[in-house]
Image (cartoon, rainbow, N blue to C red; front, side):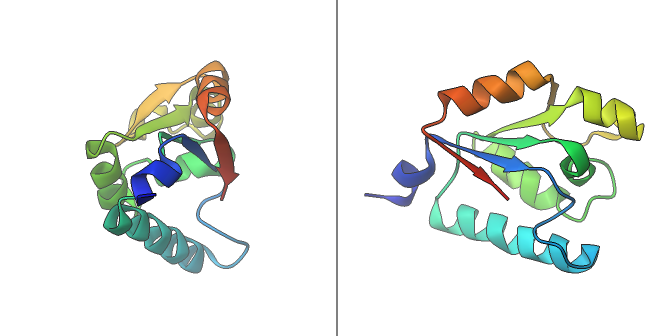
Length: 118
């Protein structure tokens, strides 16, 4: 089974400003490495959903924008929670992905055969 077949029906949920519970720089580095490996191996999920603190990763000045642009260009849907963006005052700063509702995130999850929270 190729890499793309393993993840093609997967939705990733990013709910933090990176991966783990360390300082933000390390969280960003870990997520950047994870996303880079997905790209290199062709293991791309159907969707990546960003909510709560995760929305901070898709706005201007995010250190992960280049990586996220590359992933989106390969056909992965990047869905960002509009309620969370509004709560943080970041709606006008979105630089990648599509702004959606919790209904859009739920739809991505229900379509997925597997859901992984990072």
